[in-house]
Length: 130
Image (cartoon, rainbow, N blue to C red; front, side):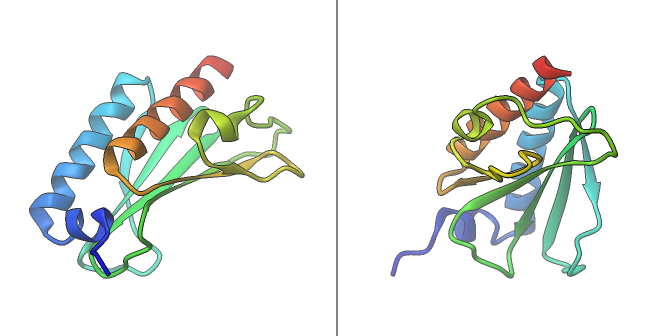
């Protein structure tokens, strides 16, 4: 079985840093904040990022020790308000959305270039809605 692009691109510290830098630039271009975060497993070969637009968050991990086979972004609401994701957010990010409360979604892309596009689309939609 062929190695996933995620596994290949996250395998070295230099490569993970390059991916993180691209995501940080993308967030800035979209008017979002991007911060490094502690990862829940506290792995040494992992970079955790948090993207923020208003009350909306997207967490992602660039992890050399785990191979989900794709780049994953977990979108969620971080507040007490009743805001919901913009209409058709799942289509916007080419991912999935919780259809019951519409306050969580997931980006899942096999290629990093497609993942960046998903993040850009999601951040742009959330920025327009705030």
